Length: 227
Image (cartoon, rainbow, N blue to C red; front, side, top):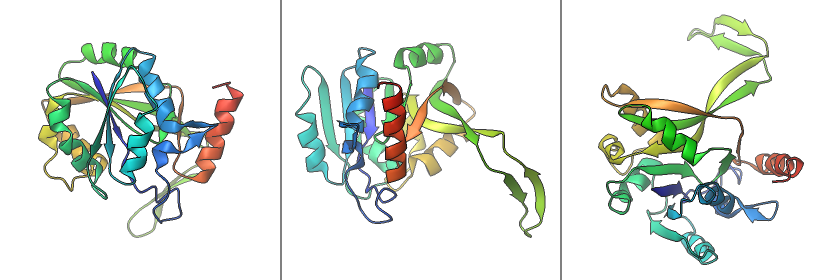
């Protein structure tokens, strides 16, 4: 199986709305987060990777030269291309095999072998990892007329999309055009399809790296756990 990783964004959330560094190559305690993500799959014996690049793609190509004994393809999917469009451009490279898909800017304790086994137990399924996130604030339910419907104070949890998936070639049936967002357009179409089901696989650790604060917090978490 191949591992397809989104690596072409502008990192605007990391840089206060302006194009920033190539986020997958930002170092977490001295190691690029992309290398840490690749290691998740290497530990499971998976050695074929497709990096969907665009912004600062030459840096991505330079990064791949540091790896040996694994197969890494850097695909130029264009600057500014939405995630659905990026994946569509990788259709020929991915072929007819099942494949993993993830993002180059978050870490989790996703277990590829466990995910494959779980998927085999579910007919006509795609797999999405999730993380149970604790909300440390009070939450308001507000109607369109601004009237408050409910107030729930603390001790609330919600399930976060951890962004580690397993798909097969059927996913391309749900991408209609290069301007499709994978999250806003493609996944909602899957949910509406009667022949295909999305199943969640729980992760007990997940941490994004959208901002400088996220990076700092992630570094502290990994140091604490000697990772």
